[in-house]
Image (tube, rainbow, N blue to C red; front, side, top):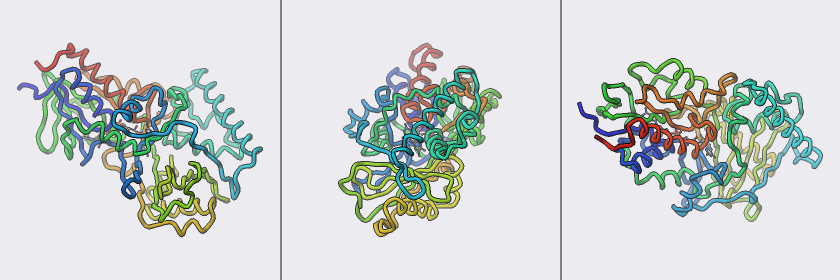
Length: 420
Ligand SMILES: Cc1cc2nc3c(=O)[nH]c(=O)nc-3n(C[C@H](O)[C@H](O)[C@H](O)COP(=O)(O)OP(=O)(O)OC[C@H]3O[C@@H](n4cnc5c(N)ncnc54)[C@H](O)[C@@H]3O)c2cc1C
């Protein structure tokens, strides 16, 4: 039976879309199947109101000077901000930090970073929590910020993830929405939406991807679904994936990072410089970062990560909004609540049926698994997606680069030629 296409691509997030574009550029035919009703995956923008975009997933073009989406944003006319117009503050148990407290927090951050680097240099693949200072009064802030960066708590993620990531410290937000940018860039790629891959089988001369609507045969497949989706068993592989592959998916689980947004009747901080405030309430252990009126928009946003993010997601939308409003009141006074409307956007990435989490973190002892996750099976089934990146994991541009890498690998195996 002849193959229908050269490459069957599973998942139309950043990785799947870039794989499709790379295949097209090489003259390889492809079919791209996407389980959900939209492209973009974890890159997704909604609007609170016209002209008030809100990213449910990625928002920042990290490591901007190495990030291909900066040029794509220019090409598609998406504005973004560079560093320097954004400040962060900490509101600690009722008051903003004094300069002395700021210095103490900064010193802890530096000491923690050095301890993480030292552990990695010594070849240790231990949890971040094993080497940082957990006793300091300021430790909850560092733990919280790590849980946002890696979407898992510091006792559940290896120091290797903290040092292997290529961070140029240029984090440029896409004002019109990173998700909207990915959707605009991906709009010229033909995609079969609402089409979930259910089984991927090796055939005599390639692969067969089966969906409820039928199957597609290709010379090779690129699987871009999240590690939690791979580990869930919801896609059957025939023959079963080798142990090293399922272990890699299992040891790179997605954690939780959620964004809680509430529309305001007007922006009470209009005219003020953009500032994110990390708030720790009296009697609480977990800080929460809040921003009111980003880009002058009339909404507020707060972010959660790790176990607490998972717990709050399960507590539901009303609890999440209450959490946000309580923290806003602590910083800006009770009066701020009068601006809060009932229009909310609260993400629940752990419960999202097609991603089952936010982004990947390598568990302690498994710092080397990303390269294994990326390795093809039988030179027929290739793997892309953020978790397969060894330097830009957890990001949208990291996912993009892995899509191109997978097609390069396929072209090398297929001899670079198009369809026979
Ligand atoms: C809240 C949040 C904030 C983030 N912030 C940032 C940020 O500021 N900057 C940044 O760079 N990154 C950020 N990220 C991470 C970034 O969004 C992701 O790393 C990236 O978008 C992942 O792309 P991907 O292609 O690897 O996976 P996905 O986007 O998950 O794409 C996989 C696709 O596969 C589909 N799929 C699943 N199962 C099947 C199936 N059986 N058949 C067919 N299709 C299937 C899914 O629906 C999905 O569309 C954030 C993520 C979250 C959740």
